[in-house]
Structure formats: C-alpha cells, structure tokens
Image (cartoon, rainbow over all chains, first blue to last red; front, side):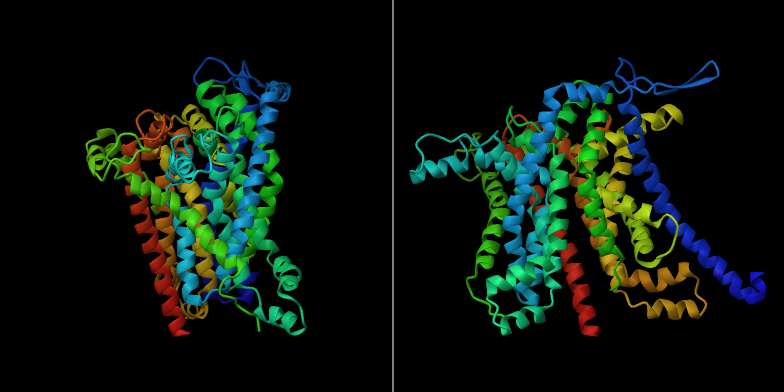
Amino acid sequence: MANKLMPAPLMERVRSVVFHRRVVFGIPFLWLLLFFLLPFALVLKISFSSAVMAIPPYEPVFSFVDNTFSVVVNFSNYLFLLSDSLYIAAYWGSVKIAFIATLVCLLIGYPMAYAMARASARVQLVLLLMVMLPSWTSFLIRVYAWMGILGNQGLMNNLLMWLGVINAPLKMLNTNFAVVLGIAYAYLPFMVLPIYTNLVKLDVRLLEAASDLGCRSLTTFWAITLPLSKAGIIAGSMLVFIPAVGEFVIPELLGGPDTLMIGKVLWEEFFNNRDWPVASSLAMVMLALLLIPIVLFHRFQAREMEKDG
Amino acid sequence: MVKSRPFSFSKVMLVLGLLFLYLPMFVLIVYSFNASRLVSVWAGFSTHWYGELFRDQQILSAVWMSLKIAFYSASMAVCLGTLCAFVMTRFKRIRGRTLLSSMISAPLVMPEVITGLSLLLLFVQMAQTIGWPVDRGMATIWIAHTTFCSAYVAVVVSARLREVDRSMEEAAMDLGCTPFKTFFVITLPVIMPALVSGWLLAFTLSLDDLVIASFVSGPGATTLPMVVFSSVRMGVSPKINALAALIILAVSLIAFIAWYLMWRAEKRRRGEA
C-alpha cells in the first residue's frame, strides 16, 4: 500500500497535486476536443452525404429507423471532384500560387531577418515591432489597400505613365500577379519572425571561427548560417504556404475570373450553390494535401513550446 | 571578427522590405483625406468621408458588435491559452499531451475556410441534437474566435513561462502552498505582461476575422469585417478608406501598447539579472 510508504499528509498533498493537474489539463483539452477535433469528424461525415433541399441541406449518414441502425456512405462527392476538371485545376492553382508566394516571401524575408539579427539589441526591439505591427493590423484592410494601388486608374499605373515607362495602363488588378503579390505582402511578417528567432540564437563564435580559418563571408553563409537556420526557414515557409493554399479573401479581391483557388471554390460551393457535402469533401481533400506541411510545422512548433528556458 | 558593412545586401533588403510593408498602408491613409469621390484622382484635402462614416448606422453597429465579440473572445482565449501553455511547459508526462499539443498548434496554420466550415457543421449538428444554438450569432462567433485565438495566446504565454525562474514556485510549494494558490500568488504576477499582450493579440485577431465569422454567423450578427468586405467587393470606396485609416491607427496603437508592455518587462528582468 502506498500509504505505508508515505505519511498521510504527504499522500493528501500528492492527491491534491494530481487533482489540480487534471483540472488544468482537462479544461482546454475538452474545449479543443469539442470545438476543434469533433468538427473535423463532422466534415468527414458530411462529405459522404448528398445534398438535398432541406434544413440542414444534406442527407443523414447515420440513421436509426425501425430499430435498425444504417450507415449510408456515399463516395459520389469525391468522384464528382475527380470528374470535374475545375476542382483539380483549382487545387493545382492554389498550390502553384501559394508556392510562388512562399518563395517570394522567403527571398525578401530571409535577408530582412538576417539584417535584424545582426543589429544591436536596442535596434532589434524596434525592428521587431515594425515587422510585427502590420501582421496585427487588419488583414482585410491591407489587401484592400492594393486594390487602390494596382487598379487601372490606380496609383501604380498613374506613376508608371507619369514616368513614361508605359503609355497605356497595365492590367495588374484581377490577375494572378496581384494574388501572388497580395499573399506575399500579407504573410511576409510570418516568414520573417521564425527565421529571425532562429538566426538570433545562432552562435556567433562559429562564424568567427570560420572567418579566422580563412572562410570567405559568402562561403560561411552557405556552410554555416543557412544550414543552422533550416528550422526557421521550414517554420516560416509552412506559416505562409498552408494558409495561402486555402486563402479566400486575397483571390476574391485581387484575383480575376481566371484565378482558380480552392478556398474561393469552397466558399462558392458553400454560400452560392449551398452544396454542403461537396464543400465538405473539398475541405477534406485540401486537408489531405496539407497534411505533410501541417505535420512538419507541428513538429517544429512542439519543439519550440517544449524547450526549457 | 565578423565584419559589419554599412550597406550590406541584407540591410538594403530590410529597408526595402519595411517600405513594402508600410507604403500601401501609408497610401491608404493619405487617400482617406481625398475630397474626390473618385479614389484615384486627388481633389484636395478633406475630412468629408470621416463625417460620412460616423453617420453610417450600419457600420457603427457592426463596430460595436465586433468590439463586444473581440472582448469576450480575447478574455476566454487568455484563460484557455494560458492553461494550454502551462500544460505544454510544465506537465511533461501526462496522458493526452501529444493530442493537446497538436490541437493547440494546428489552428495557427489551418486554412480559415476549413475551420469556418467545420465549426458551422458542428453548430448545425448541435442544434439538431441538443437544441442549442437555436440562432447562430454572437455566441457561435465567440466560441469560434476563442478556439483559434487560444492557439496564439498559448504561443505567447508559453514563451514567457519557459523563462520563469521556478525556484520561487518550488519554495512556495515546499512551504505548503497548494498548486492553485502558488499559481495565483507567484506565477501569475510574473507572466502578467505576456497575458496582457496575449489578450491584445487575441483581441486584434478576433476584430479582424472575416472568413470564420462569415461561416458561423447568423442573420442577426454582422461584424465589421463582414460589412467592409461586402462593400469592398464592389470596388474601392472613399468611406471605406476613411474607416481603414482609423482601423490601422487603432490597431497600431493596441499593438504598440502590447509591445511596450513586453519590452518593459524584458528590461526590468534584464535589470534584475
């Protein structure tokens, strides 16, 4: 028996600690189970249903009629997604645009993070605020700002015409170019921050050693700095790529009729066509596509959160 | 020594990158004072559109709705996020920990259309099964926002919790404090700046969300981003420019306060060390 090994008051203390731990763990766990995990199970369930004119507008998958429990699983939504080239084109378009935008963010963001990490401690704090601030400011408003800049009568065209670079306005708004630009602009802070956190922890002595041994600065960068900041690059890229694939606001406001992105298609299936089962299966396929990036990101995030100070 | 040149490639990129981040917002603020109805033509300085904005009842009531939801969501998200951060940093061996850590980090990257759709389906199912919620609106948006904001709060708070000196907590526990009391008397005051900045971050995130709110909202509850979006879809409008300028200024102010609190806490801690 445990209480032969432990005096009663201590046993009491251990019980109290265990109880407190259960409460602290249980509250967020139940909340997330109910409002984060369970909803995904429902999306999966309804993706096997079919649309009907009713409230809610789908047929039940599980039913209990005349004391018999029946499950009607319907793969037609998934087959429909495969048969219509629109959906495959939309998935491909999303991945392509998100990939290009992530690359643009990395090419701009890495040097920014590098310069920030090299600045003095005081300047670093100010730069950190300057990079973080836009990511806190309204996303919708920042995307909207580009509508005024890129339009045919917009600032950019007026400027280029005034400079004499072009004679007639360029069509920039409602193109894939505008969508990539918008995503790169909106998500840039999410690329810079993880890379900066990574670079700032880099042991400067390694760079000094390389330099002392006659390494040129560019070689040092390729051989030491870049490999050591790999975790930051992966985290930043996932923070941009994953939400960008499902992006709705940016393709809706900046994209044109030929901009096919899956987030927009899902929105239209849901709100315009009111086909909830097809929207659900679109979401499930999108999740499956993003599974590997999400796992990569999760591993990085878990390591960051569990590290001891 | 590692040389630091005054005009290195990375410094030039930093300046260009910051210009890229700030110029569009700056342009928007300047154009909000444009007298012309045509957004691209400058017709002199005017605060006309700000006046129009404050007479628009639909926008004003949406602002109030958004502020209320953001306040409640941020408050609940701080409670849940802090509990999560506590589990992540302190309970190394508890069953279900891996699942919790997956569930708390996934909302950070989950595409909003998926989160929105899945929560809506949950609310519809709940209404069928337990009869609640009858109408979707403020309460459902509150639950949705709390869930995704908790993830951000957990990140901010766990970063701070990792750095807390645990000898004080251990001393309190050794002297007979319950874990509950130890948390409120010792740990809470130390992580307070992180809680405040986590709350402010959650507040701005909730205020800003369009996609998730559009899915889980009902006819009764229209938030500010929903009003802005339906107007912006039609094209650029001077009234929205004025609103945008105000939002940028207000959110910048909140972000600055959050940053200042963290910075002051950091400075005080370095002074102590």
